[in-house]
Amino acid sequence: MPKFNNKGFTLIELLIVIAIIGVLSTIVLSALGSSQDKAKVSKVVTEVRDLRRVIELYFLDTGQYPLNDCTVGPNMSITCISSSDPFSNSLSIPKWNGPYIILWNKKHPWGGHIGYG
Image 1 (cartoon, one colour):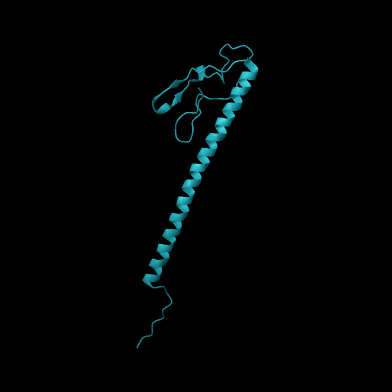
Image 2 (image 1 turned 30 degrees about the vertical axis):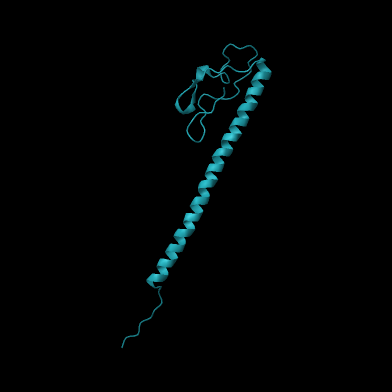
């Protein structure tokens, strides 16, 4: 009678290992999702702080706050064109010492534009 050498894993053992790997990967992916959201929020907070500093610098140089010639579209998206961006073009304002920042094409991670007004 032939003797079998059982050196492998059973089907049940393999299925349990695959299930454990699936549960662990789900936990890791859910943790990464919240980290990405936190990173997006952190990026926007940093860009808004930079915009505030740029507005203060603009005011110190020119003695006035920049005019907002940008248009507000659907979903509160702010659209500027490069020629109407007071931070990158002088727009005939005395003592303008820029460009300060390129604002007309600055987008936040959720797809809208970062602006002021």
